[in-house]
Structures are given as C-alpha cells and as structure tokens.
Image (cartoon, rainbow, N blue to C red; front, side):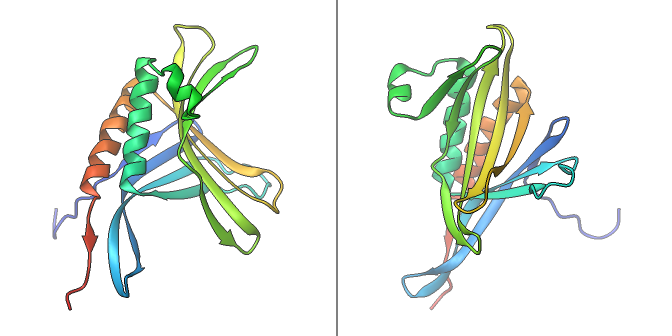
Length: 187
C-alpha cells in the first residue's frame, strides 16, 4: 500500500433490499454572532434496488444531535431485552401494533421538520422489534420522510439481526459521546 491511509469511523448494516450507514457528522452554522461547528451523528438509509418508476427516494439522510443517538441506543436495549414498561407506553415513548400476522413495538425520535419548496418536510427515524410468534423476534431501523403537500411519504426499513441490533446500540452510544463537541474559531 502506498501513500497515507485514512481511517473512517462508520458502520454499514446491510439487509436484502436496503441498508443503513451510521457515522459521525458535523453541523455548521452561526450562533451568538460567530461561526461554529458541532458534532452530530449521521444516518444514511438507502435502497439497494431502485423502487421502480416511482418518485420515491433511494436514499434518506438524517442528522441527529448526540442525545438523540443516545436515546436510540436506549430504545434498542429496551427492545432487545423485551422490558418496555407500562409507563413508557403511557408516555408515548413506545407504540405497539397488533395485526392478524404480526406484533410490533416501535420507538421514534421526535420528528425533524424543515421548510422545502414542496412545503414542510418531516423526517422521522425509529427502531422496532416485531414478531409473528413469541420466539421469532426480529429487529429493524426505519426512516420516513413526507410533506404536507406530497401524497404518501418515502419509507425505508432496514431489518437487522439481533447481534447487529445490539452492536448498533453500542455504536450509537459511542458516537453520541464522541460527538459531544463544539468548535469555535479563535478571536
């Protein structure tokens, strides 16, 4: 190998038709009259196959603040252990859905909303545990993005194995702590 190698902190989770890349991110902007950069955790959800001739997105980016990434790690551990308590359901932290074929428990971060040319866009990221039988528990990350003026929304679901889900919790906790920084120019 020639030259200097560059190491990148990131992990990519692959599923049959989708994937999720998690890595450190940066928010640049001005605060209190001066420019500054702040640490963030970046999620990139992607489809491995285009969704056909629809106008659906093949990638959705989501940039979280460190406490949000830490919150996802906490939710993953609760879902892995199957110990989501009644107060968490009552506080709307977790939602349960039951159908004839599947039961699921999910947790969503508060939505990120911003103005776009099509109107207000809202992006939500979450995690879920789902099963068809009590011994067949599966896990996934998901993202949805939609607008007030566009019918339907883009949605990408990334199923992850139990070991991968456990690793995701540890990785998110690590990134959440490592990305707690602010850089201000001198002067």
